[in-house]
Length: 103
Figure: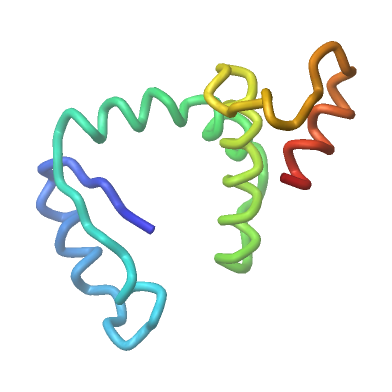
């Protein structure tokens, strides 16, 4: 997993203050770029609009799974997921979604 931050110093302090003993944070790569963050924020606008009405996630894994599913849906819609190998040409959306999730 990677985290992209802009130049805001408080964000960097917050990430460095995370518990270092956690395996999840040891495997996390921290990137810093003003422009990467802008592109990522624009791309995640749809994800944010879908998740905002929710009251929040109680468990990190559930949040990660939900966000990954929403991002996968956006990739399929934008044509960034190769559907050619799945042989779903001309099929209905539920059949395509089932094929993508089982891939």
